[in-house]
Image (cartoon, rainbow, N blue to C red; front, top):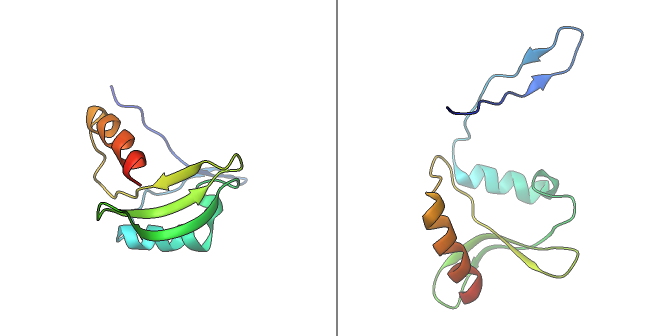
Length: 96
């Protein structure tokens, strides 16, 4: 059974905000670049559309307070299966 979530407008008459879709991943990326706190108030963005040594591309690159790199890959309507995410995450970080 799927879990459903809603975002509510807090007011005298609370109301569920309607769902919306972004037109593109690029729109989401530009929103995050303008306001990185969308993802985390602790990360500092240090790169956008970074090309890796293997010819890949990282959508956004950030650094965490402990100095670790955060690779941000944006997907719209394309969530990979769990097994694929596990295989992809390790090499992606490794070949950066």
